[in-house]
Image 1 (cartoon, rainbow, N blue to C red):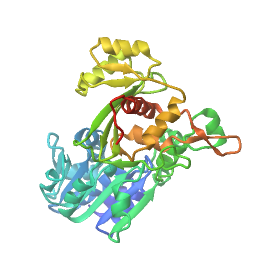
Image 2: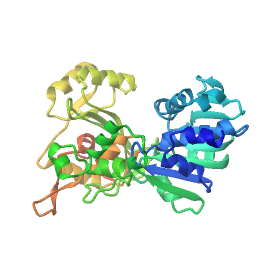
Image 3: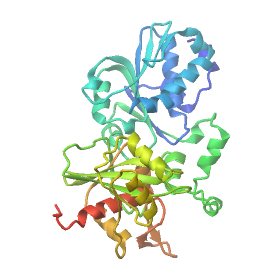
Image 4: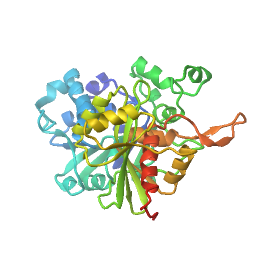
Length: 399
């Protein structure tokens, strides 16, 4: 593309930082709607149409996420931007790839493991939503990238990029927010602004300190007074576990129905969400269990305050049993979880958000109490139910 072509594009700060990049690894960390993904894709297409015979790989955690995210952005961008559309030679939808008249190719792919990522070489790499991609996969892709790698993510919690990339001299790290995107939709901007803890937003019930830090300010979502301050985010999901349990909490209009799996491995608790949705009837829940091929022989410990829901799921063929709630069961359950190092799977975004938002309540003087807030706890409650059932079994030996 010529300089005049470039200037016809709606270019954000992220796009310009990609243009000025001098390091082999560029990290774009920031809040939602800061233009990270869109601008990196825009830049990659710009060089693909203007430079010959490049291979550019856009990698994501899985194909469904790419299809509704980076790949969709690319399709719209190519179709709606004349300099891109005019230089397109072929769009292979089944392979999710664009070939331009320059001979350059942009491919969109996900990788099942590090071995899978060893296939193929490229000039440019873009790891989209990198906190959902295991480090081992990124490392194999990066080794086979000859010019430059880009990564982006929302900083919902610290992960391998903070530990392994941020300290390095060959990495340029950029923090962005929605304010860096002059083309943001006004409705989206207003929704983000509603998370800010102001007197008006608090009164409206829209304020959310965690979401404001992550999606508004682009900061790693760690609040003071967390009930579980030391949880970690991981892409590992252990197959060599000692035991596993499942917990469910019911919701409908405002609160989600949640299903959480916990695996005990290497002295730690590994957690992931299997369900986190509002508006679900018991029939919907049963259909979801079928859809994810949940084993009907696996026991689910569910909120005992919903005996009708438990019975309906049981009659539908699912092994659902009520949680046992004793005196001060909330704090007792919290203590049980806190006995272990906690690892949350990186794709469990709602569970990560709850652990990042669940704090001790404060008294009128602003001091933390020994009672947690009654918010951001739907998945955590499900985890409590499951873990309590396991740890209070008469034949269970604590290890």
